[in-house]
Length: 335
Image (tube, rainbow, N blue to C red):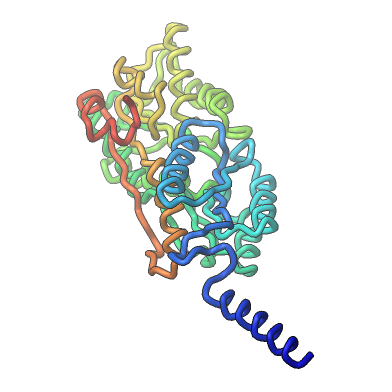
């Protein structure tokens, strides 16, 4: 009996020591062998987030780890995104990479995840919290200034309305677009012009909602069948597509619109608009790299490697002159 007890104790002790070498679900090189990484977008329905998904999946394939990709049905559905974070925590994921829909609404679930030992990395947008271990995103203020510079260049000296510019905003509380819009306003002001009116997109932030809001904004500045502004800006993909759609409709109705239009984010509709001369320029981000770097950076953290608190991803101004260059195609993901 004593010999049997001693042998049992040695076996159990050996198992305990073997288990101390690494945490549950982590391989010897620090990558997650069992626990997946959650990647939660603001939504899963438009081309921008599809590009983020593509980048995240590429990183996962390279690292031979699994990801759980998800997102709410609309970028205004903060409650649904918060529930997704809670669900991923309950699944016991190794880490969470998230593009928060709102700077405030996602603070509670993100900080709760961190409190339970699950690291969180932000992509695309910021959060009013210091708990995430890294933020991987465009410098959106600088990107807004870049859009302003593109519009100023497109306007040139042609300012029959005194340098008046209008802007279609996205959703109030969206950290990325609000920083972008602020940078745009300051860039226009620095050029001696003025954003005379801006409007937040009504509804859920869909392309249809953006078109409806664009209609109201454009018609407020239309007199005698002519748009009385010198420039137009829309601050993200849905707003830019909605604005372009409404500009096309109003021109078809006989309304004269001479103001150059600058949009944001690459989409086939906007790229076609550039080629057709309907869009003066777009400033595009690199969403695929955001998804890719989000997963890669999380894995570095899980391996115990140092990571940067802020990682800025690149932007590019796309015009008719450069749209078919290899450098731009690499960002717009056109074939």
